[in-house]
Length: 257
Image (cartoon, rainbow, N blue to C red):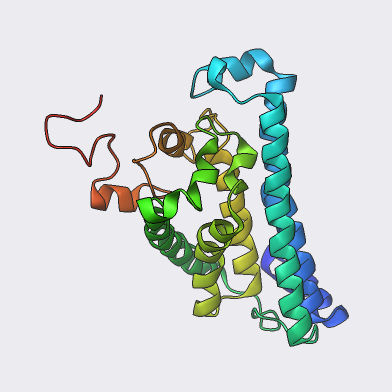
């Protein structure tokens, strides 16, 4: 029996044993933990367990790193946002009835071709939607009330990926990831896999390290340092709009180095 068949058998056992809404909620909690909380904690532990390695590979100067108190505050708010999303998800499923699910879970699992196609679609949809939401959050009439909170960490750490105003967390961190595949009608496993990937990417982008080079954390780290640059996630929309260079919004000849 190949991997696809084994996965199909396991998934069928799960959805026939438990109510669809329960499967969706529990799966979301597991994905949040595996995709973000554990990787973010590992990135944070590098500072403690491998301090010399940490100092060599930090993108920004070690003296600029947040204090222990600031990091603990960041972790607390980040975890609160995760619990908030889970609670809202649970309330929505409760109102709908746990016999039902918001995502497609009872169909055969997708083929590899379908999975890859949906994954690429989601990557592009997330890049486009996040870019414009993020640019909007930087508008002067909005920034001070919502997005300024996220930029408290000029030198980010992994948990800072979810350190945000609850409104921003929903609009910028949750919907651009989950909504495109939901509207497309993708299978639950595809959606869960993509959410896990994006959560890990968010932790890596904010980790302050770029020793893996994928994702290129330097791009978003520079955004936290300089603010008005690199609004997207993979760099595509910034390249299209020319916002991938510090000083893009200044007159020619007056760009920062």
